[in-house]
Length: 127
Ligand code: SF4
Ligand code: SF4
Ligand SMILES: [Zn+2]
Image (cartoon, rainbow, N blue to C red; front, side, top):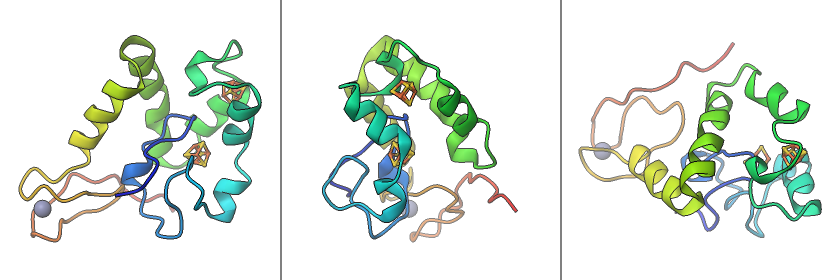
């Protein structure tokens, strides 16, 4: 399990397959995360997640949500949930969603089959 489970943008790091990163708010991050605008912006503004920012949703947020990656399309829905229920409850829900119903293993974005053999409802990888 990753040490840090989410990014200020509203992505669930627990379902990210990057093995060189221990979650976007941890000390072990990769170069892409190091350069991330959301991470820096939220930190500078002392905001835990973007939905608590006075400028939310900013253009960066909208552009990210509307790019080609299906896992980015979830951030608005995630923010709305967090606004209503808080980060803790959202994380519980995400963990449940990204756990194999058959064997309890963690599953990641775009994974089509669990190590136990269960078929998973995965997104299509963009071209
Ligand atoms: S996009 Fe940025 S804030 Fe969001 S999970 Fe990735 S590194 Fe973290
Ligand atoms: S909503 Fe935009 S401006 Fe506000 S913290 Fe997130 S990235 Fe920064
Ligand atoms: Zn399984």
